[in-house]
Amino acid sequence: MAEPIEASAVADTDIEKAMQEDDNGSTNPSLTSTHKSPSTDEQEVSPPAPISGTLDAVPDGGIDAWLQVIGSFFLNMNNWGIINSFGIYQTFYETSLFTSSTSSDISWIGSTQAFLLLLIGVISGPIYDAGYFRTLIFSGSLFIVFGLMMTSLVTEYWQAMLAQGICVGIGAGLVFVPSFAIIPQYFARRKSFAIGIAASGSSVGGVLYPIVFHRIEPIVGFGWATRVIAFLALFGFVVSNLVMKERAFPKEKRALIEHQAFKEAPFSFFTASMFFSFAGLYIPIFYIQTYSIQSGIANANLGFYLLPILNASSILGRILPNFFADKTGALNMLVPCALAASVLSFGWIGVHSLPAVIIFSLLYGFFSGAFVSLLPSVIVGLTPDLRKIGTRMGMCFGVTSFGVLIGTPVAGAILTNTGKYLDMQLFGGCILMLGLLLMLCARYTRYGPEIWIKA
Image 1: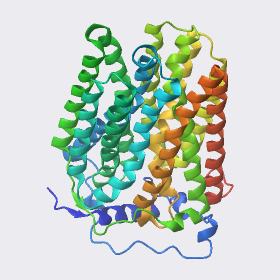
Image 2: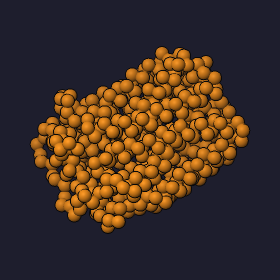
Image 3: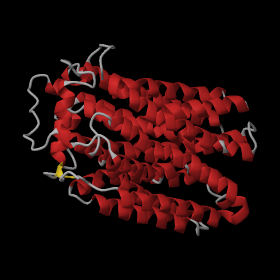
Image 4: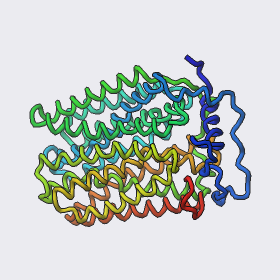
């Protein structure tokens, strides 16, 4: 086995390679375009620091490398996968356990999970950089499994918020950044594709866990149904903790915040875009089941399967766009996916039949799935000094987390106050469209008006 090398060496050589040629040996226009943000037009971008490793040191395949993808797959299955499954709990809590609580109140539990996942990811990044990869995934695993076990015992709303919202959310935040950060240590040319496969674990969890809960809850009750999910998560975490390991260690610690970043128009526009996009992204995911059941489109049994259908289609949405992003550019793949998600969110207003709601779930699942898997690659293209990618990812995640936190509760409050899904659907579509417009501004200020350019 190759000796461990500096993390910065791996990253910098990978960056140098990308700056010189793509997989076909042609110049990479996303990094050599003359269109830069206004803040970098009049100055030279300093080159990466001297390095001590080579690109050949990255395995770019092999048993150890693919074991990391498997481990990351299970980590994502049990962080975003559990969060993507909250729709089944939203419906169960509204109809059975917390009938006196409003839709908005209950959705705060799920949005708190996602908020903490992204916010704590800002902190777990520097901890990962300090060499505590295994500590992060082990402690995160404990938090998530413990939180699920405690969720199985809840009888009141505040207990669910503590166990499911906060405890599971903290655990998810601890494993989120390591689950993706480990992959570039083992992959170079196929890095985006490997990340896409790992990210698909969240969709698999979003399919598996709702089905498990729905099938066994009537038989064994809420408590044991949730415990079974906890044991499944425990199995996945055992695999991840056994097979995952670092092969590179950081040369220097990175800062939590780079103040210069928000003075650059492309990064600022894109970060604002993610705030609004993620605020609207989870509204259909949280409410598609209750909408279909309460509108009489589907009965309770059939309406349940809409969430697994949505999450199943997002598996392809996380893999296929990443596969093509290596050729077209990540931002060029994300823009049409964001446009489709925005149009579908407005189109949800006209969904009044069972075939229509199934088709909506399939399409929305696919296009919404691209957001999480393409986000890191887009930030790479918007970072002039490529040594600061980790810091900027953390900053973008931190801002995005607040959008995730408030989006679905605001939607629930609109539904509670008006009693109409139409107002909630309009709200979701409008903020997704605003996110798309800001995304286009980021593309224009970084790459200019050219359409046929890798971005």
